[in-house]
Image (cartoon, rainbow, N blue to C red):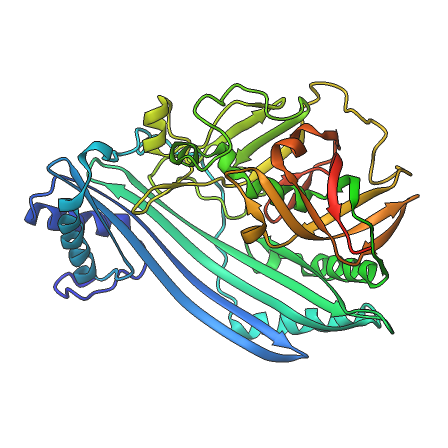
Length: 461
């Protein structure tokens, strides 16, 4: 790096270089306390249409958030310019912003910003290039269409690979850096039979590198789902016994993750309050944890935006809310330690990493006979929820969501033409009648099949 050139770009996130620059600029500005969170990613992705390239993309994304403490006021600024001059301008901007800082709500360094990190063994994959990705996706599209005569196209698809870096450094000596790679594929196919409406279904796979990406299972799952939806029926509006697939139950819990979010509780936009910890919020058989360090979490970083080590944390145990997700500021307010779930920004956010749902075995399930593999009882199997951005009122606990799924009778699955599931999340958690033992790994977490009684379904019949 040529330090005489003020426009030199920091090509990779280098904690030592960044610390050296910020030490220099902070001393020039008489700033004694500062911290920085930065990230960088290099991505390439391809899409295809009927055997030809539809879209080819490559991108480099950089971002840096700088906080400075100036006379007990904190100023913050963000930039994507990681040149020497860009970093110097960010320092100046943060100092100017500190004039408007609120002394009563001043953030601090995380108390764990220099604590030892849990080791994550990740081998960063090499770039494979657009041509190789394009060839793989073309073949996947053809294989998927060839699996069934009624599948006519794969209108939505994509194959991508990324290399991502994250760092956190501060003036007190914290120095965090990690790099990882990730590859993903999604296939969303469309098909129909004579005199029937077009139907669609999709699947996603994610892994740390392209060679480990299970493209064939993505093809198989997409095909099987779509074929199962070709024959469909309407269902009447009623209350049903519902079985959520692992994907669907994780979607629902994630949509209401503000229940576990200390920041949301403080802001008054959560179902829970500061006195909710320790209270029963679900059936005794339900466990929910957030396990960012789980070996199946291919996007795991060992620290959060504030430099706090990522931690596995039990949220609901035997139906009781026992912990919340915390940043430095919320942990200080609750008198606990931060949990490693913060994102650095103008307002520090808190979010889960990797939800894991299991049966606590605290008591016998209300209906031990239920099983997706053997039960003869009629039920609705919900596979995927839609419109989560608009159909969920997280602060009120209510939801009304279209879904893809089947009515299952005497073991036979028939796709549902169109329907909406509605209810209250706390009622759902307290009306669980069976949590199956076998957990399944998805791209968004781990969960078994979960059965809930008396769920309102609005159909079209």
